[in-house]
Image (cartoon, rainbow, N blue to C red):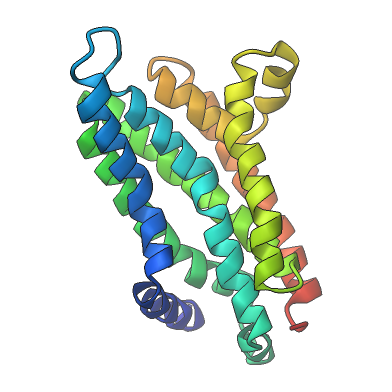
Length: 231
C-alpha cells in the first residue's frame, strides 16, 4: 500500500497545480446553486432539490470520466506508468492511488451538493451513498479509457462520448421503455433512480452500482496488464 500512498500524494500535488481539473469539481455544484436560487426557490412548481439532484447525477455519472482518462493517459504518454509498472506497482495500487484522491475530491463535491439541497437526514445519507459510489464507478470507467487510449488527446476524445452516453441514457430512459430496460443495468441509471425517489428500492440500486464497480475493476486490471508498459 506504500505505492498507492505515494501515487495518491503525487496525484494530489498534480491536481492542485491544474486549474482545469479543479474546475470540474466546482462547476456542477456552482451551476446547481445558481439555478436553485434563481429558478427553483422563487417558483412554487419546482422542487428546491430539482437542480441539485440533476447536476449531482450528471457529476457522478459523467463529470469525472474524461478527467481520470486524461490523467492516466498523460501518465502513459510521459512514461511515468512504465516506470511504475517496472517498479512492481500492481493494478490495484495504481488505481487506488489515482482514484483514491479523485474519489476524495468527488466526495467533498457530493457533500457540497448535499449542503445546497434541502434533504432530510435519511435522504442525505442515501444521496451521499449513491453519489459517492457512482463517482467511484465513473473514476474506473475513466481509468479504463485512459489505459487503452493511445495518448492524452485520444483519451479525451474517446472519454467524452462515453461520458455523454452514461450521463444522458437515464434521461432518454424516461421517455423510452426499451432504453429504460437496458439502462437499469447501468450505474448511472441507478444514481438517477435514487436521487429522484429516495423512498424507492435503494438496496437494489446500490447492488447494481456495486456490481458495475466490480466488473469495471476487472476490466481495468486486464487493461493495465495489457497496456501498462506501452507509452
